[in-house]
Image (cartoon, rainbow, N blue to C red; front, side):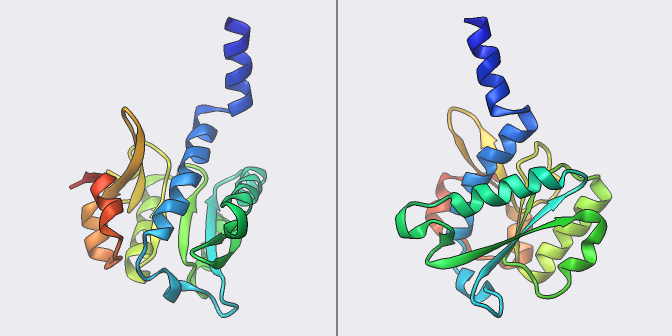
Length: 180
């Protein structure tokens, strides 16, 4: 039995990788709840999603593949019929976030607080969802993450949501845990 549990844990990866994988599923749901998502496409008509990483490009590339493969049927690689363009960005190259503005940002690795605050402000200024699967980031101002209780559900920072002017569907807000 113990061997089975160890094998299962290794298959899922580290706790940090597990949180990132869980977060990727909720990230799609959250983006689909953005009432202005169609306005956030790039010049090619794609939703450009930035995956920010610190030092593990391979992990970011793997998560990019996971996002592209997610969705069912004709929605695979799309959200609300909009095709996805996934771009991993090293936080050392944050100037890549200038233009064009991505539709949303997903944190693949935890960031130091000063850098996290910069990304949060970028999301607020550009009315973009910033999603982090890491504990404590929503409390530090990230717009969205997830909370684990009896079930996993979206975790939303109300202050950041209001400051960013992002409009999420009311159903998502009803099921989400809200941080005030």
